Amino acid sequence: MVNIAQKEGYLIKLQEAQTINICGAQLLPDLTPINLYEGWSFISYLRDTPQDAIIVLDDIAEVIIIVKDSYGKAYLPSWKYNGIGNFEPGKEYQIKMSSEQTLIYDAND
Image 1 (cartoon, helix red, strand yellow):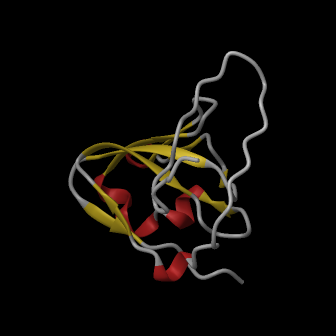
Image 2: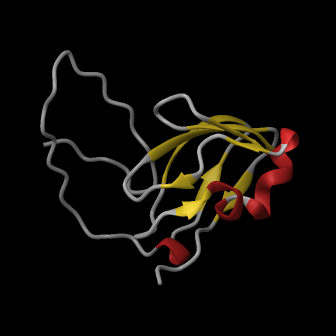
């Protein structure tokens, strides 16, 4: 058994398809601030429903350099380009920041 941090995103590289079971309590997105550091971070999307990346990150967009999903699709606020579309429940994203910020998701509907 491995303990994972509740507010972290993880990248797992496997040689072949596997099933990974993760157990634990669901976090309330609006009560779970995520610290973002200058440079790269992995983040988990904590909401139950998809939401446009532009809306999710609106409060901190001015200090975001780039956000990428696991397929390499990008959101570049300074270029007004959203190739990611919606953030999806249970997915992780990489985010590069020009300064430290705190991300707080909207509450689940």
